[in-house]
Length: 139
Image 1: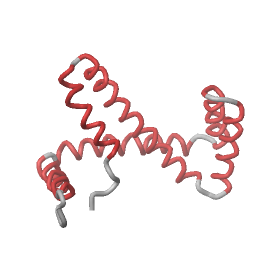
Image 2: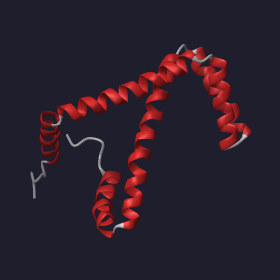
Image 3: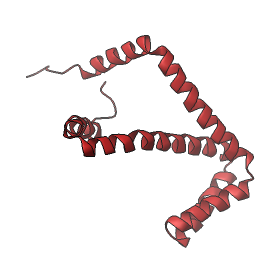
């Protein structure tokens, strides 16, 4: 078994190349929509006064968890501000919010479909199990 290796990385790279070559229009559309959402949310977050963003984040933290999380949120945002990383942090926050929204939009219908169809559940379960155990890089 020395030297035996499944070339999964090469297979995935070939698949990605095929998708890029054959689905360019769809990928461009998806890229446009994601950029529009991320840039729009970034503009909103950076245009809103800093104090308002910090207060809203603290209120959300307090509502979700506790006053201590709210205090930690305020301290964290003030540290970000003091290091001059406000815009970068808002860009990152925008990316995370849009990514989470997209994940929820995909996951909820798939979860409902999987709950109602044994065939879909049978197909999705090994895919999801593989995704949980897949290493970050194949190369």
